[in-house]
Length: 216
Image 1 (tube, rainbow, N blue to C red):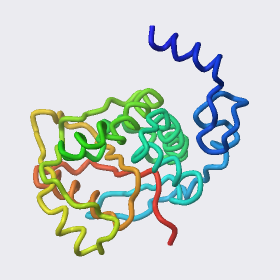
Image 2: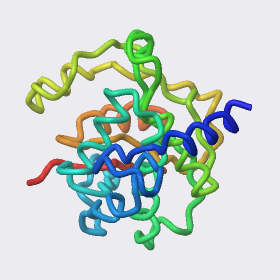
Image 3: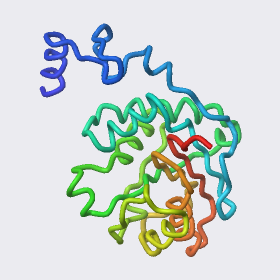
Image 4: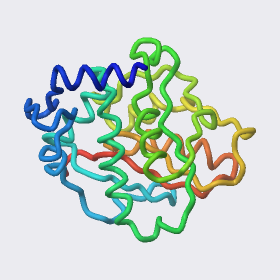
């Protein structure tokens, strides 16, 4: 019923694109703006403790607005477009196509979820799951330390901030290949701490994937 009501509202009050403000397509992100999102190179961005890290785009322009809109401004509909952008990039990485992944979003601490009302990367993983057919697992890794925001910290301080932040629950693991997903990979410290947490339990079949990385 709610979905039908939303459709009727869209017909009456045409939805404007969050990026260009036009209502021609009545979508949160119109096709023209989506086409402006640019991929980074189709290669491993970096390797951390033997784990490949892929970054779909560069954190500028419309991709930056997409990520920030979902993460900070409650624009939940943008999760679909972020996931679609990541999936379109993912399909270009040949050596990942033979794997059946389980999707692991970088978890938020319960206090952060209480404040924000949702984990933006869980929403992205759910949309990526619909596109890829991969299952999500939101219980395998939990954030048990309410860390400070990372953006003003150098690499050393980031690692100190994240030390002991994640807790692994092996009752939710059945030997799957894991695809850990985040929005931005800056120094890679968040991925690194999660990788270290998993490798303590001899889990090595890990790939990390972020929506964007800052320009070099």
